[in-house]
Length: 134
Image (cartoon, rainbow, N blue to C red; front, side, top):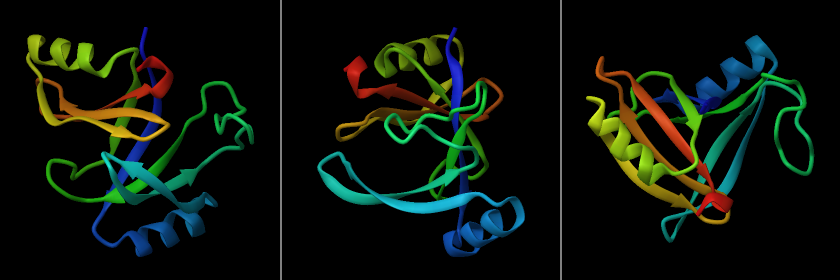
């Protein structure tokens, strides 16, 4: 069974959203550099629960962390992200089951692969595959 492991909150004004979530909920918000499809960018991590310093995974069972991202394209509302064994395989499963691909498979160098899809109701869902899953 694939599980929800992350969330993303899109924002037009990331600075205001970062301040809001830090002030209201006490989340730790941090921009981290990432290599994406050959280019360099940043990703705004929202830490909502303590994490293991080595794995960066939450230490509480069932807890997840997330991110604040730019609101753009088809990503206009909060997104749950589901970890899968293969993004490629799940893109096929999504379209076969009546969903659609919003943003195809992309690589975050050294970390893994992601894509955005919709379910038949139009809800955007993120797919994540750890780099070890190739």
